Amino acid sequence: MFKNFRNEARIFFWLHTAGPLLIKGPDQPGLDPLQPDMSFVRAWRNGREVPYIPGSSLKGVLRSRAEQIIRALAPDRMAIPDPFQRGRDDEMKDKPGDYRYYASDPVTQLFGQTYLAGRLRCADAFPVEDRPLVLNERNHVAINRITGATQGKALFNPEVVEEGTFAAEISLTNFAVWQLKLLGVLLQDLDDGFLLLGGSTTRGYGRVRVENAQVLVRDYRRDPPAEVLRGYEHDDTVPVAGCRYTNKGYCWEAAREGFEWLLTLKVDLAETLERLHRKQMEVQQKWVNHGG
Image 1 (cartoon, helix red, strand yellow):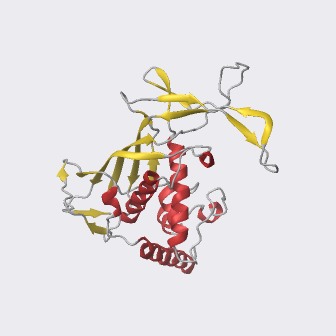
Image 2 (cartoon, helix red, strand yellow):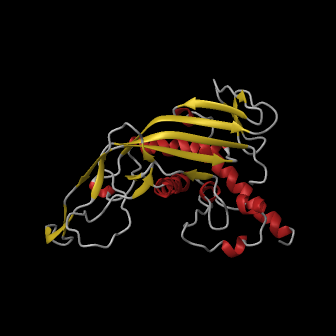
Image 3 (spheres, helix red, strand yellow):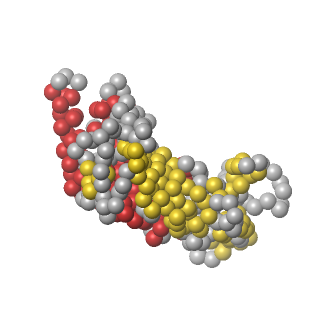
């Protein structure tokens, strides 16, 4: 699926905190009483350590939400495996790439598995320059789950980002149109607060807003795509009004403001999942019939 480079999409956006955000860094040994019990994760950026949102943290919550949506819309006979189970590794071993892709479930097709590279990548999100960045220590006390009262003097103080704006990027390579539509749904859930980032979400942490989004689409095929969005397959196209492509010499490029237009793509996710399941069964049966 990666031998033929046909299209890619990059989504640039800001994640602005709408409440405290906690992404716990590694435990650091020491007895300094002035240090918080849980420090926000940091990385070296432009000569200094700054808090950031790891790409793995963003990808993890997106995948978890995608599994929920796909399980709700997919036909009952389509199995969505646990990503931590490696039961299919032996089955997929020594199989060609096309088989591993089409015989996999939609979540694995998009996010990948140990035997299959995913189409989606999330970059680390760093603070936007010249935007406020406020860190604070909050104090919590442990609650006895039986009595519902405070657990003695069991205090802990996490370090959180009270206010901050982080520049994030998601990219898709050789995507199907339904995958771009699903990504729009995921970003909408993130913006609406149905999807929370980081830890302590049951305490009200992790609410963020999606701002300043831009979608950049490239098509590497020779013929111009006109006002349509083309997926990896030749018959995977949907019309997109106002989508004007520019000839870059080696690709066709179009940019759109905001991610909301992804939600208007004429793709029925339930019908698409039904079609993907039929394709999955056909590929597996064909392999068996040919003695694979």
